[in-house]
Image: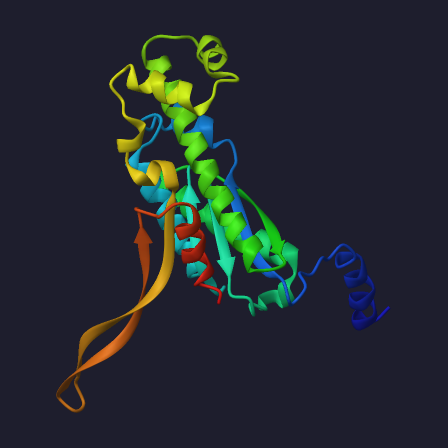
Length: 251
């Protein structure tokens, strides 16, 4: 059998489960760290519940994903997860899901492993969204998840630092509402509302243009040029204001 015939035959099997995202759908990729709770709290012993060093590693990993060949118009990271919103006309890899998943997970895993000095990995899933309303809902959902996780984490680790067992700390918080948890923190002198915004709302990233003075060695002239950089926002708005902010990146 000649190579071309064999190649065509075997690629049929290789591509048999290929899924392609439809061209009229908005695309979001969500990446999650694998086993990061143990990694950050037991292996690396980062400060609990939040550590700026790990936050910065996640921000830099997100920056890597925004510069690895895809048109990412907005990115959001909280805890050990990253969400990427793509330009609606993004057609890299013909929008094949497996290529997005494998490439993004690989890039993120490599970046965080280099930062940590040990192997750490992400998984990735593609989320197709039919319209701007669902795009807005998605990022409001992830921000609310950040808020819920932050409140739970501050309560849990406060109890742990007081010597409470894992089982007792977990049962103490099980089924309890937001008011109870806020009061629990307040009774120990912690005002949840005054905690750093990035812990409760996550971090947003997007590319922005800026003017920079440059020198042309040929003409000997100094002139302004337009460059692009990634803006990192640690003070994201909430609710409708946040949804409107996200929406502007894809309109």
